[in-house]
Image (cartoon, rainbow, N blue to C red):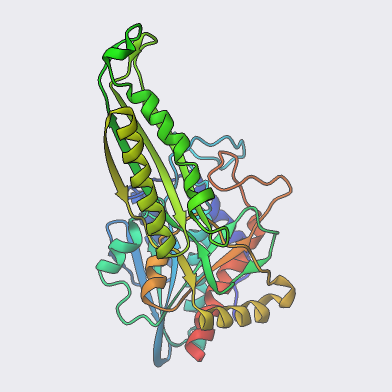
Length: 381
């Protein structure tokens, strides 16, 4: 593998630049422009896909299979609290999930693959995907044909809470399905001193919040995994007014379709029965997110060998599955795929989606190399 001198410094510079100018889902215009500038410098042709997405195909010297390498490019609506020189300059927006690192690593992989075409027995499709944080980007890219002719897909998620430099490519369930539910409660407002004249939407909604806590503890097997979190409850306008309306919303996480649907049905039943008990009307909206991420068994084995070749057996680690969601699952649903986790824990570590999130940047080169090695190894099978 030919690598230019200063490659790691190049990746760190890219990561810091993208970190400094984060953009939210579907508005990654400058990010996309900057990616295309780097690809142009490499002499690589690209095409746009899904508005701000970028796709480049790198052909090897021999015909064969096609492997897709994917990295997400959007940031979060979050105000950064880090004080380093390259902190976000876009107010209220931050790369707090590592997508800046993903862009840098994938651009690095593009450079490596372009400089080592003789190792490619087939073709590599490199995909910079928008709108992962809202769970919409992968679906749009797939609908526009990004998986056409693809035999396998590979992605890396840098992970700030995983031991620094360790890599997980475990087979099977890796991340959960991230669903959303919203409930509107309609009662009858009245004076707070005469509650018998109204129907209290606030009390009914509060009871729903408590009743929903039993879904996982009493309706899902202890051998299964699931989450029901109510993160929002809004109701009331003044201390002496019985609230006429209330709204609550939450998220559901599961690792298989059976558990997912069982949780959904339980929530619907509890919301309706609680509403009936308090004499209020309820309307519920349930939004299915992407499916769980499931790593293909054979592709995981290939990825394991790639890690061993590059970094030795000691770099491999088994990591527990996560109840976070990832729309890479839509790629994995259609072609055999692997989502790898690359540990980048600093001494003072903060979790993903935290305003002080950061990573050990020395792992960027590892990620770029792993992207390339998986592509070469898969195509060589």
